[in-house]
Length: 160
Image (cartoon, rainbow, N blue to C red):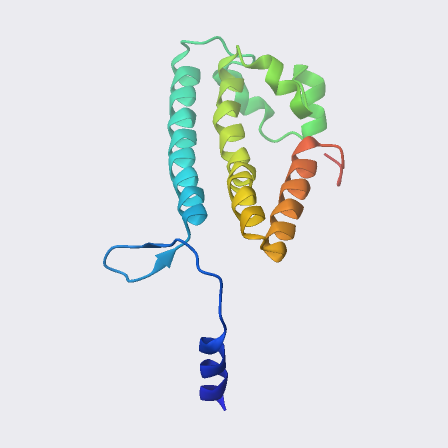
């Protein structure tokens, strides 16, 4: 019974795609998937390097901090609301206006890493539209909408 299902699948006339064979594996990959993977690789490394560089600037004191590193231990055990009250630190996307401070510069790397998935889906979308691959197109559009809505902060869940 399993053999008949496999042979039936082999007889289906699937649309031809320009695929790339990966060396030494024999696996073929669609071009849009290679673009997505390349974006993730370079984007992830860019985010990691940015995080390391901004952390170095923060800890070295080369850039003035909103809250000096020596004072941070006194805030570690606090609830977020108390921390915000005592320090006057921004919440939500308020960090974007604080990028001149060393302790907020690291958000650049975090934001870069956080946008990679959406950027990757934006790379996949035109390819799936061109192929008229409706299921994947719907999934990609839904992912972009859900991730963008979640990142926007419009919907608030929990007590933070």
